Length: 117
Length: 240
Image (cartoon, rainbow over all chains, first blue to last red; front, side, top):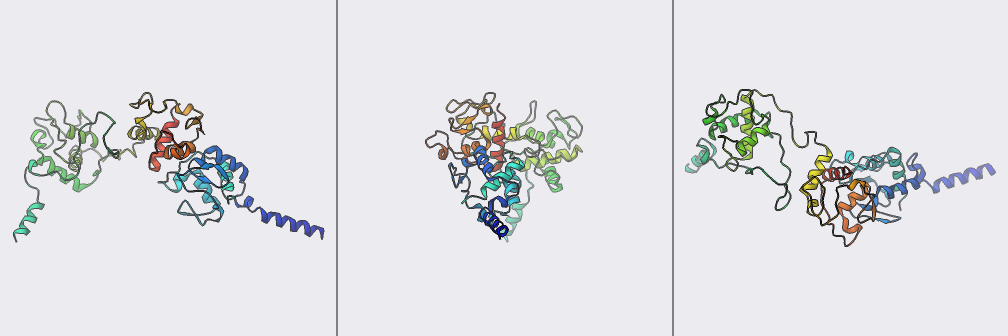
């Protein structure tokens, strides 16, 4: 009885925070700091980050619910990470610059973007 | 019937050079300055756009005679002017070298054909001259494939664009005092009058839309292609 309660609670908790499971190994809070550090907000409005008010690229919100990203590729964690790290390899004509983002940082930033309302 | 004859007549180019209006873009002379009036123009490619095209070489042969190159160079063996089939090239034997020798002229006799011949015709003659000299087909040496680094490309973007109107980068022609001196830009920790950390992302946003990040700033927005922006960022990051 008690055991099943704990299990039920665990499932409930897990369903409350699906964000952590979207990008394996990605830490959204770290990603949030990295987004600030790399300066994503100079080009993007980002929901929940008042200082991110850029009007060069599209606003970043509800990323997890989008079907496509970058205007061309399906919204999967792998595609999003690739786009964050090497946008010019995904779309040679994009204005979004490669910023030398490491694999782990890409993971963290993608994890954060998938939490945006 | 008369109309048909006229049409046929208009297609055959047999007259002397002077009677043939050069089709296509006129070629301008040698530029001494990077500054230019009016909107930006694309950087000229230095590779021969007709390289390896057998028809272009045939056309070049015809043009070689039509523009009376043969008057001085003979059939390539030289006469008044130097031979073109030996391995001596005073001004270089790349298609681009030959192109500019034709357009600009060279001391001691070679007239400048700039303004008298189209770009396309000049490249065809260059291709023909290389063919009679038995020179191997050139590996394309255009701007994009010459192995030019992003720093060099970015410097061109900087100098071609509006950046030079306001900023100084010592060691270049950019010496304006309206905006901040960028000579040691990469050593700065902050940009946009101290409002943003000097990171690539912030720099990109600042260049593309400064008014949004700092309303009232004198810095105007700059429109760039993705590759131009990337090269420009790389150039600015090299200014240690």
